[in-house]
Length: 336
Image (tube, rainbow, N blue to C red; front, side, top):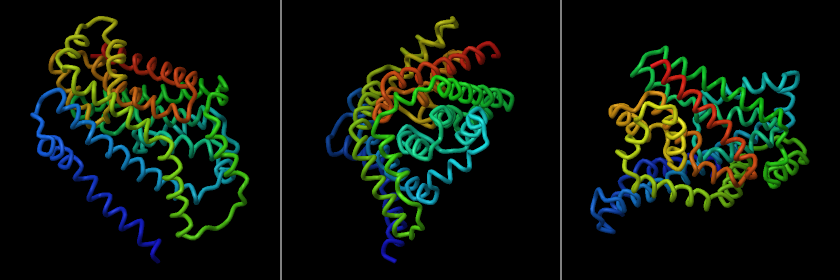
């Protein structure tokens, strides 16, 4: 009974803390440290103090939830569910699942491990990892509200096509040897255990063990990644980015992707910047390419993924996603 009550009481505490993080961060930076509002240092520090606990808290919640859910589905059951389906069909299914699945950089590792541990092919796994952040619901709603359903539909269709094709290509290249060895060690250890019926208390323990193992391995990468994003967030002027990306030339789209990669934000956080860029004359496709690169191809995410992927696979993944983002950017600029 005690273990049954624990997740719900812990969730209540989590919600209380999470939704007061911004107030707490502002109090620490502005009142305790007594820094002047609006300066580059203050904004960078506010970003860092707010984002680090936010990402870590989301990481803990997602890993715990995914750990409990995974306890109901063994690798053997998942493999049986995928029997009879071609790899390409798996890419389509994973991409569609990615569209309706909440995703952020912090959830990349537990989701990646969960797919690999369940025996899902690497290319299919990447279709999900590409689709989930790129075709996010906030971006679709923003496009629908500002430009209508046709533009939103084109955005979803092109993003889905990129995720399916990129995952299929990665699968055909057979790059499994570029996945970190400890990921497959978890898989092999899990596959050796006999399938058994677990009580809810045992499933909670599985979730807690997952949190301890994965957070213990990646927390330093998160701190470093958010630190990089905070520095750029506070010290890179918005006007400078608008000036660089506002030129209606062929290089504005790839340049916007290069500028967006070092930044760190989710779709909701980047929307105000995209709105300002569009208001200042940045073409729609260029602004969207910038937004997609921040969300789906940020340097902090690459740092986080470094824990489960070796550098050659990260470069291949980044190259394919960047190419897809630029295609979408050029397409939107042409349409608009």
